[in-house]
Length: 100
Image 1 (cartoon, rainbow, N blue to C red):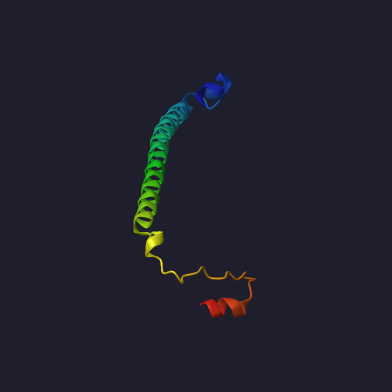
Image 2: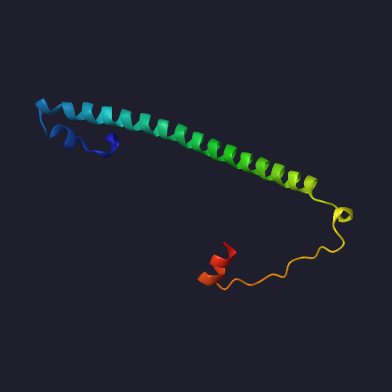
């Protein structure tokens, strides 16, 4: 920001206005520090998101594997077992209450 201001701007307050360059310099330094911290936080957020995604994928895989390992095979099924007839849910309150 300092490099965008003209010399006339810096000289306009007069000899007693020398605090402005120091003030802007301090603000510029603080802005640079905040940008550095922000970049570090963004890196941490991306890493955390990756870790969560990895954990979800592992958990999903583990659950799927456990389900597959515990599924009964065709020889264990009762000969009279049949799949239920599926009903289409039309969104009615009565059918929802019956289900619950």
